Length: 252
Image (cartoon, rainbow, N blue to C red):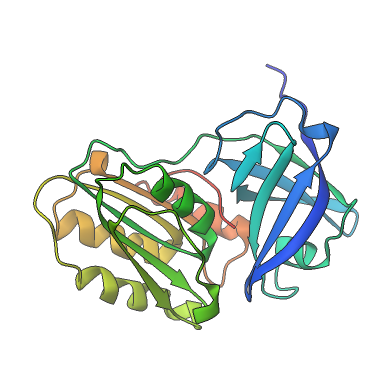
């Protein structure tokens, strides 16, 4: 079966929304026919890298079918990454190509309460998940950020407590996040959990939720978007070796 032609994304504007997050708004006729209601799905974006295209997966933050504007958020950390460096240098008129979008990654809303855990790479998908929760929903959202100023406004039900975990040292991510998860007061009823971010952190949280809290595979979505100290290719290999980490690729 022939693969669909890639979307041509043209930069309309770019904005540093927090110290470590760059928002790129794409547009142009190349987005005609792009699927609607696709927030939290991922695109495989091909970034130019010294004559070759390096493909990375990024989450769709939002898409407006009327204006044909597509927002994608990038965690930026200088030139320590092809996508990050491109996002920091991008300006109106620049173009990239993208495949997808892939499937959306959403919480099962049948739970009695909800737990969402992730880092900045997962923030666009976290925002999409929290926004679709019913107004009566209760639970927790634990979000790891690099700086206090990296907090973002989120649409969240009143009874879902948002906890921002400020950790400027991502190499110690698992410890910071696990302390916060283990300290939570556990509600009665069925928990539906959604966990995404750095591979080792996702593994640690997933293991705790399954072994200590008894969540089944049906109650727990766990996906790694990146791995500290590893290239994108090395991360893919590590993720494929871990059958309990969802085989999905995304991030910010």
